[in-house]
Image (cartoon, rainbow, N blue to C red; front, side, top):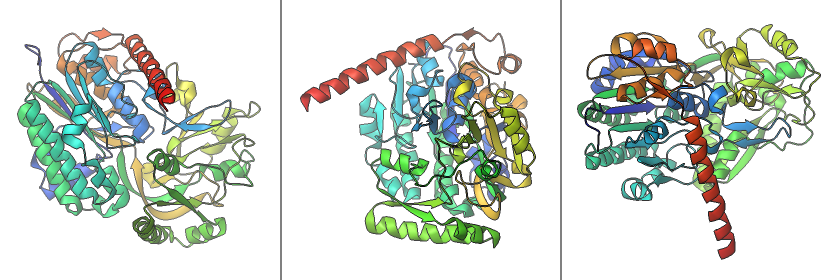
Length: 506
């Protein structure tokens, strides 16, 4: 049960809700309770603007150099191999784990990284919406009771799925009846729909039923919790140009082309993890260049989406486009391994980072940093040597991670941008004024959320000075990383034992 005197707290996470979209929702007028949270919202800077890196920064209060996750993939610098990251790559506990260490009962729906679930006492953890290959929960009965069968709808009618998913969350919270004083709910909406149906960027009514379902959830949280936060991990918008980083590096002799395409792209890897068959469709470089020069990329994408949907209905598999020419990852000196990595890795000791940095700065449409200018901490070396994002305010985003034969593509392209949302509604109004209209790094969220519950914040938090100014009273701190490493070690040991038993039984 909730401790006497503790203020109950809820966090609603909406993946890719853009800061500029607040105006769209306000004008539409069909989300009155969500708008109450957005009245007191500030812009959240998310670098890199991608789910597997930004959500951990939000949920831990520390940057990737301290929590260790920079993208979907972990890059082994020695072997140059990539593998999908998991929760075991995380080096700093998230909010629900910190609450557990303080004896606070809580519910976490879809922590990121989402697989495998690392069980901790007093935490109900549900992971079944983002990238996990096996939907599950801790304790197991929560998934069985509220979500079994719901997530399967996501492979068909997404809008029906998300409405029923939100309904399952509401049922769980109603039956919980306040036992857990802290709840964090992360949904992959509107990101999923923005990617699939960009008309939603212009008009919220395109997914009216979904927005109304989320608004009902917002109402429940506002009615039943003392403090309610709203947060998104990055924004979303249309761009007019795409910039190919690896074409720049290829033109300067850092990238070597591969004779055989052996790359397993992110989409392939995530699909294979879930047991979905994929088939690659290679788009010849000459055809892509022609389409790019004629400004026909948006039309080509629409045609491909139509063909991909038809293929999926007929075969149950997925088509994955492969644009341009593959890179030889073992002979190339420096390259961007994946567009979602937002950065360049340098593998050859003879290549000076300053030289690559200088070359990239000569090209328009880019924002560039040396890694230590953005990140700090013992795991900074896991990330790229140079961080690169498109100059979003001028309409530029990054292009594919392969060599496509042209540096700039004029297009109408929709994808992530840097600016997410952070809003609050508190029982005593202690945060609203300081958050409203402000600009914050995504690491601000976890410490403020913990502060609202009265739990000591992590001593490793990036924004301690700011937290001390924004939170009323004295802000206490504690070190949680040691406990988290012990929890991970115990979990890994149990995994090994379970794996051995399965091998013996088989």
